[in-house]
Length: 255
Ligand SMILES: Nc1nc2c(c(=O)[nH]1)N[C@H]1C(S)=C(S)[C@@H](COP(=O)(O)O)O[C@H]1N2
Ligand SMILES: [Mo]
Image (cartoon, rainbow, N blue to C red; front, side, top):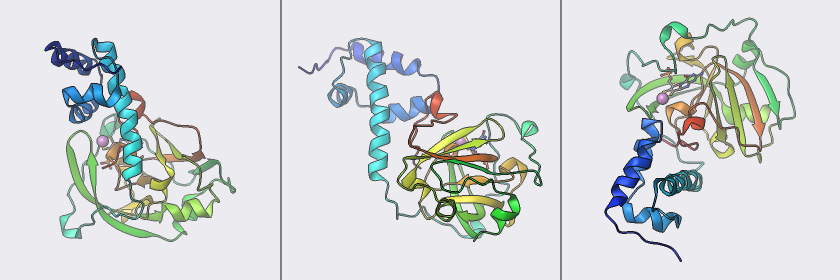
């Protein structure tokens, strides 16, 4: 039998469990999905102690990934904006300061491609620039509470995935970056028309702080799902996680 608890300690128990979740963003995110009585109904978990509540919160987070994936409409576009609305200067953000932005050498750069793909040859910047390019003016939304409109140019990612003969039925595309950042996305998002292998910012070569030599721009996802300084792309069926995701940020990370 499912247990429904109404004792007044429940508030305190949930507060305590939330307090032990290390990331403030994750705390905020989970708080938003909570109604006190609903938590036990939703999860069927015994909430009489904080370990039980923690387990319930974790289950909600995994449930959230699935719901977001179901709700994701592969044809629905993120809003696009007039160039006059571009945020200047566009904010920089990373898990370190501006003085530690990786400086990647353009000539020796090779984009590694591995996993479930037919063509594993590494790509030079010149080769990437020779692929068809498009621009987008979209809003970047960071989970830390800011957003900004920017203009990014590059190769529609679905074009690139098809070009390398990626298994489009695979579950995940993972990214490894020059600064030890990493993340991964679901294949429907990878194939979304606005997901972009980005080579320019505001009409210029992508500046170092925004991810030179290339980043993946995904306007349907939160900022942390937009990896900069990408060095390797892999297609896989094994869950690859991510830098912030492994510390508790929601994996799907829809915006
Ligand atoms: N390689 C790398 N990519 C990254 C990050 C990072 O620290 N390293 N931070 C992410 C986060 S949380 C945000 S909000 C955006 C910031 O991108 P911007 O500097 O272009 O605004 O980059 C994302 N991609
Ligand atoms: Mo972010």
